[in-house]
Length: 163
Image (cartoon, rainbow, N blue to C red; front, side, top):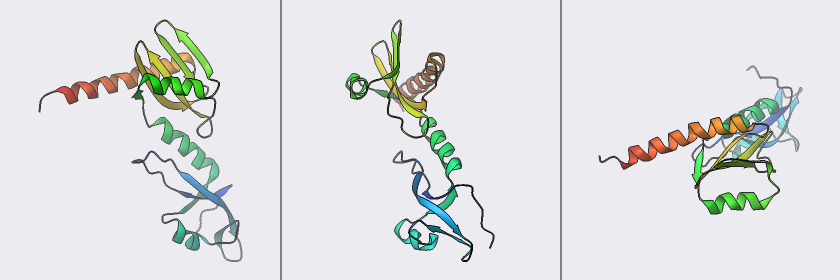
């Protein structure tokens, strides 16, 4: 059996797209030369840890962080109500708060994972939220929001059509 060697190995669980849960890193993994196997910090083998965490795998930390960031970006744009928008605005000091005409956006200052922030937007009387890189500029936010709103509106129109 050939084992993959990782620069920064970790034990992890795959994402659960249904619940919106990204990859979960459970523990750091160490390669045991004598056993030719990965073990946890406490010395448990992958097989022993799989009893507690079915589906547990070993992967590279940096690869998983990139996968986590991609997972959140792929979740799309969601329409929210004004109260949810205001809760986001008032819970922590906003990052990159901008207003231009009838549009407004800000990023939650507590990052979700890596460089991923929750981004809140207002277009007139409609409110939205999505995840993306904290460094996304105003034009990038507007572009991402435009594509998301088009999808939301198309889905609403399709749902309103008689069967």
